[in-house]
Length: 471
Image (tube, rainbow, N blue to C red):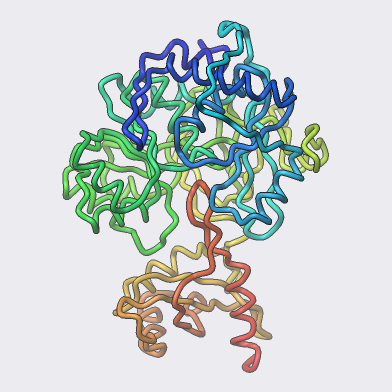
């Protein structure tokens, strides 16, 4: 791998970076800005190895703060901009981070050698989604960030003549991995804060050739008639079970999007579906590993991964060091002495380098003595009249585990429960048919920097209450 650190990657790049305020900067301009940021941080007593909160929207200062972290060998703690004050304070306390005060008008610069080898320096702390427990703090070193960027450029086919929009928050691995890879490709990079109207307007001003996001993001842009016709490679994460036709719909306007896989521990963009494949194949989450040095296997249904993009470990409370016990619980060594990260995801291998992500193992339904992916049932539910979205959980009854469905209707009225159950019974095995169909206005969600995740634990608790009288 060619890069010593994140700052070295930017120093070698000829990318132009554009921000929402219309300002364009070369990567060398951004490095100059990072030197100013670093000087201010040092004046505030921040030293090598310290943690500093990255709690900003996608703007120039956020990028310069990341580069200052690389220059000064301190660690950026990625703080979700949608967190409440209490959640921000909790993460700052748990990680031992400091909130810097930055004056973007200062002219003082720190004099650091860009060529210094920083590959092994700790660089960024992401958090896991934390939908069922307190988020774990995930530490990446500079080497995993820059090595992964090179692999993404090759597998995604990014080019110097691309215009790549980074619309996902930089405080998450989805946004950060997209940014670093775009810069490594020497592309025109637009660092943007996503809104339906703002991103739609941007699409009509810019010849966007690449953009990563969620299925719901592309769905909303299509609804606003954004110009997606020039997108030749768009990786999307699947968060909305009802959007099974999203690839076909983008194809219809001339663009091309394809499924992928990632998580904080292995970074976003870890794998990608073949962009030349049929829409039905591209719609599947997972894909082919972007790194030739990576590996994947499925053991007892669980996806195990290894490769250069993996994290260094989970942090102790307080953020001073890696927690070896917590980290070790998520790794296993095979008979050949190879360490694998246990993802906690249910998957199946398509071939030695390609896998199909199905769901989180904790979300899998155990029905009729079988493991059932919720998506198998939600897809049928969403094909029922007036059902626009659905989630399924299981409840324990004296007769065994049975599914309960929560649905959102197209017109906001209460779904015809008997009709939806009959619709499912004609298309699913009896043990997969929901025993109740409950209309809900919206699903409880955790709105993270990498996308929206539904809090299934709350739905399970509600389902238990609903069926308890009949148990």
